[in-house]
Length: 450
Image (cartoon, rainbow, N blue to C red; front, side):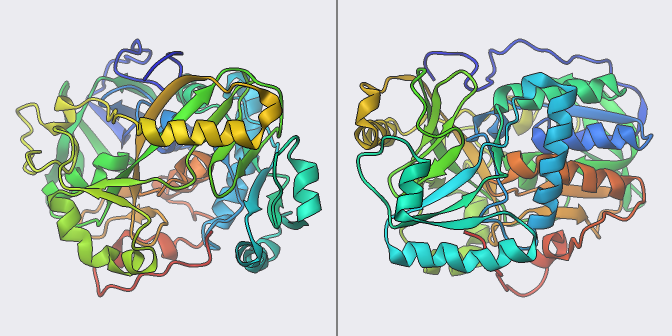
């Protein structure tokens, strides 16, 4: 990472949340990303006593390393109702904490050719069924939306009501709202394992002691499968690296977020752009990747060259060959050994992307990168999350595997899980996200997502 230390949060970021841990709470949330922070906030609003434990820093991993898109566009049809609710919740959160930086400035997918445009047009059926304002633009319409481009497009898919926010400020702001509601938040406090009694969750064992509780929410992102495996629960979750960069302030070409064949870009509050290659994921193979391979074969067959595969993850990563799979409540384990996943970015890919952005908008002049970073996106074979109770461990609720969609959908997932914790109806059909879908025969449903 270089340049501005706000991009992203890392292990040198000062501790902000250091509440004392109680001996007991109604709920313990594991993981201080956007999902965990939102769950904690809305669960406290349901009158529950909540503790949030984060092994590193709030938003230290993918929740401060994502692109900052808040989109309905291109979503799986089953996700769409939750993310549409999340849009309203983002507006409310921004009113309560202005530093969140949420703005509805639109998202656009720019089509290189008619075949790509046809795929976007097909997704419009999902948008219409969900009442979303997505629309198909002609090439002239796309050119009118994006200022100063050196070349045109066949057309575009545009959703004006979609938005953006600043991840590195938004998620800590949500956590601060939760703390103000009475949630106790402890950074630098790893949960070593669950405490199981009589076949159900009775608490968690942290590096700072045991917390008894009635329910646990696992929102641990890339680390979730490792903790679950210790307790005999299989989740075919893998993590892939994506690289990102921030530019210095530049004139405006589009106020929202856009993606085309060479790159994706988003306008930031400080006047710069967040840039990312449209697709450049890297998967490091380890024991869990091999164990989960059969679940990913349909996806690999669909897009055999979409992911760069390497045989050895960096030491300390969740799926490194030497990462301990057995967890000991009495000794430091893998969650303490690596407080924050901070993979090195692909600098060559980012330089190609910077050059592509500069060539696409020559009137901007020299495009200078002020920061580069990477994050690990936790994904599941069908590219939708696992949300809901774990049948074999009563008292445990999963909210993980967001598959790159977590930032935008986070408040909606938080509200849904809070109602599950409170014994209320979640308000949405969660059957598509049932963690038990991986317990039976392999049947991957890719839905209609883009």
